[in-house]
Amino acid sequence: MKKDIDWSNLTFSYTKTDKRYVCNYKNGAWDEGGLIDDDMIVMSEDAGVLQYAQTVFEGLKAYTTKDGKIVCFRPDLNADRLIDSAKRLEIPPLPKEKFLESIREVVAANADWVPPYGTGASLYLRPYIFGINPVIGVKPADDYQYRVFATPVGPYFKGGAKPIRVKISDFDRAAPRGTGNIKVGLNYAMSLHAIVTAHNEGFAENIYLDPATRTKIEETGGANILFVDTDGNLVVPKSDSILPSITRRSLVYVGEHYLGLKVVEREVLLSEVFEGKFAEGGLCGTAAVISPLGSINDHGKEFTFSNGMEEMGPVLTKLRATLTGIQEGDIEAPEGWIFTIC
Image (cartoon, rainbow, N blue to C red):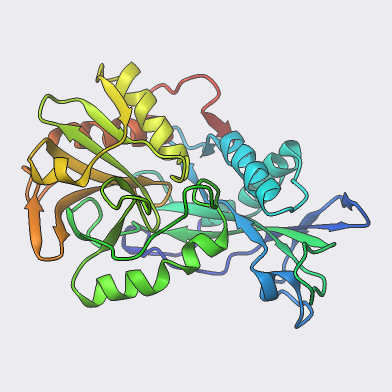
């Protein structure tokens, strides 16, 4: 039986659910793993994650489809990205099959927490790995723990798909050959001061520029960026330090194969925005799918997209509706995109 929750008014916040999955790496191997009730973690005060931020994570969602099934969206790509992230931080990669099985078990065990179809809410899943044994010298941990928890969530940004106002950050998100292209906790830690500052100044997010020239648009603290140019083409900023968003890659495919859009992946100059080359802009990621940009502020100089601050532009509206339709079972999905739980 579904939980008694006001599903349509959920925020993007944590609620403890019934079960979570835990698997431990010790003596050179991952153990069998399984579901537990306890949401508390006990570790040494000198645990590797606490001393040297040795942790990687993922984010994905479970949905109720139109025909009542509970599914996840392309979790195989989350498994692949977690492996890439782990290798970069000298964490033993979790086997892909174990990742997929952990997702299946957590969602099935928390099925009553999956929001009903049509509410706009979903069950957010957070898989993560961290160094757990004591580490005082600067080196990788020996032992690790992998966990997955689930929590029902509403839209990431208040107001749902309403356009947001963002600013150009004075901070750099990632170095050119750093960790910007993997999903590690330290990337988000460095963005916290910047996002608090942006919120205090009345902005929803920061846009980070390339650290070398500070002329090219990269991404925000928690999402990739998309633009629609004045010819109706989908333009995707390209950089080696941008996180390869699964949502962005899916939107690119949907744009090309479902909507017939021309997609251009290239370096995007900030100056192009203020020259009016883009009619629409949006942030994309697991949490938000697409959040439309209303305006970008660069140290007092402001550019407002043609859709203004009231509604999402027509191309991104269609793109978002098509992808969410695929996720929720209203539109036929490409082969392998939908992972059925129950």
